[in-house]
Image (tube, rainbow, N blue to C red; front, side, top):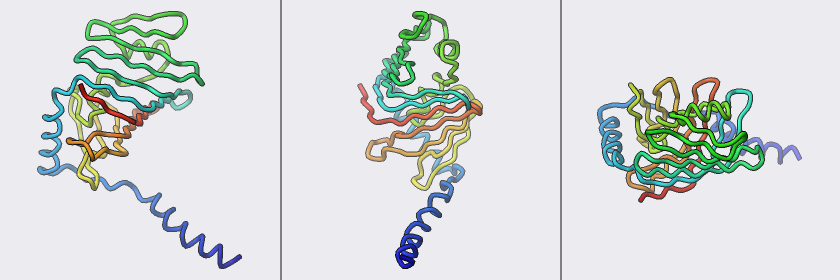
Length: 201
């Protein structure tokens, strides 16, 4: 029995230590920043796509989660969340002229700003304007951004507009690579995207 415990400890200890090791992050040098600029230029006109995955949001106390699909057709968008457990399934659509939120009581909501609609109806703080760029692994055009890179030489942390965007996983089989797990945080708010599929049109 003691021998078995020693074997288990020998196996488990390195795994526990590895789990505690923080992600390798390095500031962008000229080579890394030039590579990121090339990625951004390659994806600059990628504005017709569909992504599907899982979404989780929290304000530090309450939150919600579910599966989602996001369709972007130029400046028009449709975001559908399916969360039957929490009862917060909805469809958010719009363009620069305004937004429409459907599927929640007391009925459809319209407004000039999608983020304001979500804040009013759900109490969720989701930076949708910036997130459109962040889900592609790009810096948004909302202001200055600071980038750190991982051992794979891809963005690991993007700090912009008061948000810290943590790229946990990339799909390196694509050219250019695309994010698979995007965690955005602006305390107390957190938004977690786990992207299962990308389709470009």
